[in-house]
Structures are given as structure tokens and as C-alpha cells.
Length: 440
Image (cartoon, rainbow, N blue to C red):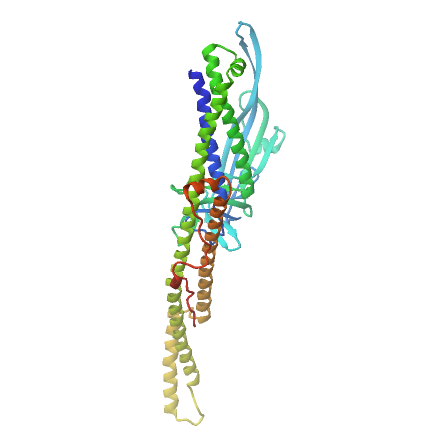
């Protein structure tokens, strides 16, 4: 019976693998795509182009890169003699490829879209990069010894295979990962965290990833099902000594029972996937609403304070300009004025100019237009953040509503009484949602 346990273990292992593939596919489908400026804390799905001011250089193709892996394999072939079960001496030939060198490089980079740029730290990510080299050659090719080792392996056929994968500046990427706060500045970044289940960087599109995982899930499930059907066949064959084919034809009831049992277990697995998926989508909707509240609170606290600072600096510069105007209008009023009056005006003007020089040294960049521009930039950035947070909420809401209205999720939703959220027309706190009045 221990032989029957082998297909049982294989079937369960494949079933768990199928579950993990389906879970990842549903996560990619459910997480809304965020803009770079809208990368909030928690799991994010972001698309953009690679940007790096000082990229690395790949080893084989010597092209700019932010992530690359390469390997060199050498082909071998040997003939050996052996004795068969009857004691006769025979010969056989074996061949294969052996890796003789490999390496890679990795660096942090920025992901760029129409809203800005976001730092990506790829350490620990599952990277799916396009192939930049896949080539086989012999010693006559300069690449053979130029990039490969100088010595040959045992039984070498003197054929080498060079492979390389790379992410280069300008490549369009799909990133699924968790955001956290950067240490040097108060801005988010995408990096590996202990809490996050997934951290994926891929050159494939979201649609390609979903399609690929769907095919994988189908074939894994099919293989797991047929392995489950083999469990009673192997057990009966081992127990009775029948041929496997004979055991299958003489005991169809056991095979059907094994298939039904497998489908029941797979159904429970899938039910848990549907239920947990709905929970995650609903929690993501709650998280999205909290992000809007955070951005509104930021606006409520930040904008009035910035406005007061700009007004204060503007008033201070106005006083400086009045001082400059007073100095320029001070001077000799007439050619026939008395010498004492002239000296008094000059002394007064010298004192004022000295004060201006001191003021200039203390405040070399005192310009109201720059302050206004910085304030308006911060105001626009704040409103953009709120708009992106609202868009993230609406996308999360759409993902939940899609799940609640599509099969088979709708059956689980009605069974467990899941409810859809409401469109974001009115925010919970009208005073916080009020746009601050800006009067300069």
C-alpha cells in the first residue's frame, strides 16, 4: 500500500500548487492599477518605465541594466560500458550541458509614468525579465573565450551556450508589491516586506500574466486529477498483482470514487479561495477609503499652515521693498541745499543700505513669486493625491462589485451575505472634504 501513497502525495502536492497559482491570478485580477503618485501603503499594482541615471552594465551584451542574470553552459558527451541484467557488456552514450560560469547584477531604480516616479528596490523580488542573449557557439567565435572560461570541462564537445536576461532603462514593467516609507525622504517605495505575500517585477503585461497563470492552473489541475484516478489502480495492482490496465478496467467504481473524492477536496479548496478572495477585496476597499481620509487630513493640516507661511514671507518682502523705495527716494533734493542737510541724507541712506546688505546676507533668496509657485505646486500635488486616492477607491469598489456579480463568486457572496459598497459621491466627514479657501 505504500506505493499507493505515492500518487496520493503527488496529487495533493499538485492540488496545493494549483491553489497557489489560482490565488496569485486572482490577486493580479483584483488589485487595482495605481499611478506612481498614487502608490499607497499596502499591496500595489503599478505599471511604468524603468529609469536609472547610473545603470549597471550586463556582462555578456554589455548593455545598460538595472537587473540582469547570465550563465554559460558547456556541452559534454561520453561513451561508457555497462552490463545488462543478463550480464552482457554493452555501451551507451550520455550527453548534456554543464554550467561553467554565471552571475548577475541588481540595483534600485525608478518606475516612471505620467504622474511622477517611484523608487523600486528589486532585492528579493521574483523577476521575469526578457532574454537579451541565447546563443551557442564554438571556439572559433570570439565570444567562446572572450566571455567564457579559458579551460574546458571533461568530455567537452567544445560547444558553449550563452544566456542572459536583463531589465534595461526604458523597459515597460508590471510591478506587484508592497509599499513602505523610504528612510531618507518622506516618500513611499516598493520593496520586499515580511508581511507581503507577493513581490513581482515582470516585463509582461497584466493580461499576459493572467493568461499564463490560467493555463498553468488548468494543466496542473488536470494532471492532479489524473494522478488521483491512479491511486486505487496502483493500490489494487500492487495488492493483487494485476497489470495496471487490467486493474483499471475491472474496478471502474473505485476509479470513479477516487475522482469524486478528488473533486470534493478540490471544491473545498476553491470555495476557500473564493471566500478569502472576497474578504481581501472587501478589506482592500476599506483600506482605500482610509487612504482618502488620510489625504484629506493631510490637506486640512498642511494647506492652511503653508498659506500662513507664504503670507508672512510676502508681508516681510513687502516691508523690504518699501525700505528699498525709501532709500532710492532719499538723497540730494536740490543743488542749493545746505551741506548739513546733504550729510544728514547721506548718513541716513548709508544706514539703510547697510541694513539692506545685512538682510540680503541673511535672506539671499527672498522672492515672493518663488514662494507662491512652491505653494501652488504643493496645492496641486495635494489635490492630485486626493484624486488618485479616490480613483483607487473606485477601482477597488469596481473589483468587489465585479466579484459579487460574476459566477461562481456570486454564489459564495449570497451564501455568506457579502454586500457591495457605494459609489464615492459623499465623504464621511463633509468638513474635512471641504476644499480650503486660498486667498493671497
